Length: 362
Image (cartoon, rainbow, N blue to C red; front, side, top):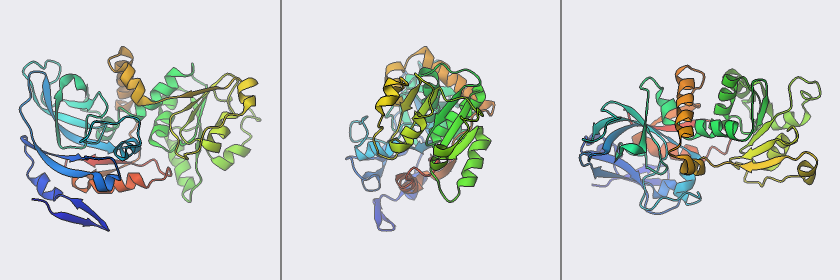
């Protein structure tokens, strides 16, 4: 049975409320797309029958799964990582183990787990997969923190660890500081005793945003215009940064780079402005600025089974359970209202760090 739902001028196939009511441990509901394109148009809801877990498999009931900009780009066909179609979207999430196969030894029913590999397809009520594809997390870990563990906190952690030798008292500068990753950078740096200079775009509620980021632990928060005229370095209020993190590009990247210490790196991990990163010749010759890039997906592909990855997870989880690291500003969206999460993620225009998270608990 397929009933068309009107959402403004949009038509979304499937009576999701009916599907959700029919769910059991044997029948699941999932979002799926058969072609790349506008997520609102190509995403549909389907039911699927679930089999019993095989020897090394676990059946996981999803609890929450975020909608990331990279998920949107993947559905559009614009992201370098392209799953085989048809595909279930979603790279992140947290679930509870409902059943385990006979040979699974390290995971038991009731454990909370997060995905270890990309493109597992977390936008579904249940998922059956091999036990080595998930990582067990403490049950006391917050739902939002667990659901968003494997992308933004890890991206922030790796950039702070892998590109400069930072010690307490050092300074990091970043643009897009209100992004989910930027919020993690602020909190991790605070936990490690590292000061941050945080740059955001101007907006009507700029004072509220500045207060929010400072409460997270940001040392300074500037608009892009304020950064260009600041005298904090001339007045020796703070040491020049040893690391710059860029997710905007264009003039914003140039502005944060100009304050770097000699021989320091600027690491680009996003390009919200869709403008190129232009490096002045003088910055390369006279300051020996290091121009680097980082993609968490590639790091995970290369280091998926490494000790470094497990140690990273453990440290981040420890920070989260001790309230040193909180999940991003977010809004929970019921699974049946998934189109709301898609539309809001499509239209944020880089002006908010709010994360929309699919909620499977209701």
